[in-house]
Image (cartoon, rainbow, N blue to C red; front, side, top):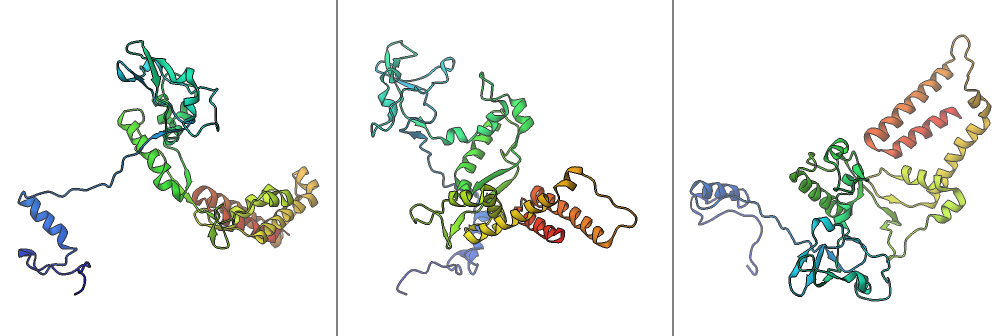
Length: 327
């Protein structure tokens, strides 16, 4: 052999474990070591530190001052929150913009009353966005983040929608914050969100749209020509929400034609719609029965697809099928 063999194999020179599959033997060896008090099974998490400080204006100020006499001093609870200054000079320095506001940076030490300087780093904006859904339950509370009774009434959030990149960023942080608030007794639910929908991306010629690739389509020209409802309909109809959407100008034109068919149908029957009365005398014709069945079937299908499955494309397809029967 010219290189070490690294694939699964059979154990040799391993005592009672000779002849075992190298993968399956791991649990058996671990159990044997536990039984003989040589060790115990454990789980190793590959956790990394999260540097939450940022050298920028927006974000939560870190409630800390630096005093030449007392060192690092936390701002007392009664002096919170620390508010950002409004006269910050943006775009005029490569340093932290808060350094441009001397009367904010220079303050007094809460412990000795002497001169001190504020911490000018702010926290990562994930510190804000990781628990905003709980704050929404009690937005006017100026005494604490939120009232637990109100939060427990509304939470968990019914539906979380985000791109795949949120699974290892915002969703992860939101779950971490929520479980931390649960451990503090602020909320009683284990998870912040009841349902998750990971939406797909918009692609062009098979590639993800990005400025670096130069394949971004500005929908404004479609909106200017066909209207925003056309863009919405095309985006919803082109693909299930969890799948990627391939942008197509022809698809947008098709959505425009579909919407115009509905518009014309209402325009041509406006008097009947306003009167809200359809005269049906004697036996109902088979065509009318079929139309009425199609109407109620469409309503049921659209309601189920949207409320239960969030499948907007099949809901629109049901409307298209029904429109073909109406016209």
